[in-house]
Amino acid sequence: MLEVGNGGMTNAEYRAHMSLWAIMAAPLIAGNDLRAMSPATRDLLTNQEVIAVDQDRAGIQGTRVHDAGLQEVWVKPLAEAGTRAVVLLNRALVAADIAVSWQQIGLAAGAVSVRDLWTQADLGTMVDGYVASVPPHNAIMLLVSGAEPAPPAPDTWYLSDLPWAYALNGLGPVERDASNGGEGAGDGTAITLDGVPYAKGLGTHAASRVCYHLGGRCHRLLSWVGLDDEAADRGSVTFQVWADGVQLYDSGVVTGRAQARQVTVNVAGTQELTLLVTDAGDDNVQDLADWADARLLCLALATTIYLPVLQLGE
Image (tube, rainbow, N blue to C red; front, side, top):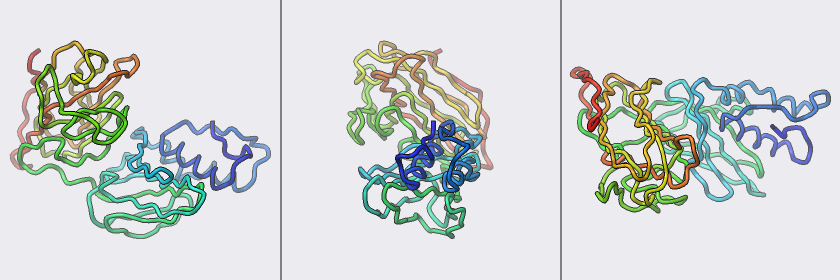
């Protein structure tokens, strides 16, 4: 439940609290006495633009994309293409400048419109990023409207070489061309399945979601999937491929003892691709899940072809 209006915190801290609940798509349950609340508390709890972020129909949970210790940047992709909700959080006892770049939040570089959701004021058009002075124990919440990353050009692309629109991972960040490792960035080793190393791929850890903007340019996804040898025969996950809200592939439960599977999925004509890894309904201990050698085959729009779904090895 929200602590807004319960006493013991400043209005600035209440605003930071409400901002985090909204960016995380958490239930907004008022925990204060509704019969006796200040105008400031009422304004916080009834800000329609902040509530709209929490209840956005895409239902995607926000994730932290920058952590400098006491200053953090959180982002939540919204249902409307090219829009993101962003929270700049300052946990320090003094004001601090916090910057966010459009690349950090999965938008194309260039001019982007920015709106402050707490003051409900348009801040104008910003190029490549935004910097704000955030008061102590406070947060600024933004609506950022720009363009999705450019879809892949005609070619074969490794997913680890493409910008993603969104990445959420169960332990640490999603790693490019390395296993997940642990909580730190870059702490994984070479992606290895059944003793075979792979130079390219994504190292994830359940529960994980990685999204790409395809723009209808690509027709086939190819990958080997399995639990990294780093998991030491432990862990259990499911690998899923979704496009435009439709599930195209489900591996079923994959354990650390199972052999890697080669997967080919038809993604022809789709706009948004999502790679999902679940914990298979149990805990996520050692759920070090690899999308090894993951590639997209992409054609020019005029020559897009539609191929039947093929799941190799089945």
